Image (cartoon, rainbow, N blue to C red; front, side, top):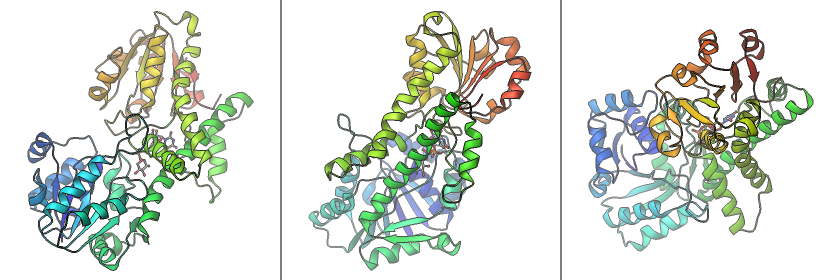
Length: 436
Ligand code: UDX
């Protein structure tokens, strides 16, 4: 089967490469000529473990190609995926659908065979209806069906998530749409991955509801962590204790500095906008969004408290380990590190940092921070070492060396990756989240 993937960003490129790996004939399309040129040269636009190899294998096998020409790319495709960005619109926080609609128009104008047009981008309820209207208005004579097929992959684990999903959600309004999508996902279907067929609107909402629920779970445990600090309890024990209940489940109960990334912040905001439009408030999500925003800067204050308070902070030096919003990505979008670095800088603290993949993207977002070539040079002379992102290299720090290099042996672990006893035995003052 031939598949066209319009938009070769995170979701488009990973999905395209995985579909090719299933044996489909995939064309990835993007307007950005330099991105397509680099892909032709085997250079990935993002850091994602295993992606370069997967792309390379499938390009070599002749199943995966790249182009900037949409009309050529979609010719003969039975399924045309729209996987372009839906960022928060400046000013009002609604999802910006201009890229999605522009692709829909171009597809309508250039369609040369019957096809299913699939929105893989995260889009608000009703977007599929609008895409359908745009296609109809284009006057195309070919049969088409508009299907919603949200993507649930996580950055850093994208290929594994795509190939072994908990479920595949397909929102289709007719049998033509369902039939083509069954064929697209046949290999996963055979793999016994559950496929859930729903209406298009339900499918669109599932993506937002899922992300909002996960964001809520994170924020819930984060607030429990704050309470643990006040009452003398241990949030990791609380997580284990509640997570063992099957109805709650153990995942997404790691307390930390707040969620960031390309999805949770923007999707929770977009869901609130939809709720507002339909006069059907989702108050839990409203609180989650507010609490998460506050939390990121509060983490800066936590560090300031640890180094002796904001009054005496001026001139001190803090080393941030990890800048990306989570490990195994170079993505800095809405990372808590940005608010933390800013809070420290505002208090007159000199900030150094090291991140295995994120420094290039981080540098323009935090010009006041000095990027270092490894964790130890960042730590040199520091009044505190702060773990912001749980990259594996930070789990295995040579604490003896850290103690020698740092001016003050103080470790602020915002990801709870160390055992308090171990760090204290190594001679450190240790501050973590929701533990003593
Ligand atoms: C998320 C969803 O998991 C995925 O299904 C969706 O398609 C896109 O959004 P992603 O943003 O890549 O994926 O990362 P994820 O691993 O879900 O983490 C998101 C944020 O939550 C990170 O900042 C992470 O540090 C934080 N988090 C996650 C916690 O603080 N605690 C947890 O227990 C889990």
